Image (cartoon, rainbow, N blue to C red):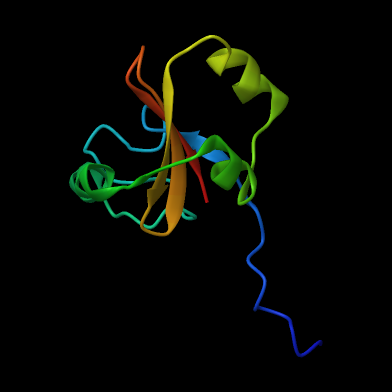
Length: 98
């Protein structure tokens, strides 16, 4: 183990969307996400500062499939209290990274 282990943040990976990360009761079903339910997610979304695309790419790996889905869309990059998101503003879908 190195002295630097844990000091460098690992890039976040895609874990799902706001559509498939919560069950029918609104409970979060993705263990890597920091929210218990959709209410906590909505609060974090409301507080989330928008960051630049470059800042987002410096902290997260975006799969080609997600990039393809978002191509040509109006998006916002968000830092969401322990997770990150790309908000597809056209379809109102958050692509979540943890």
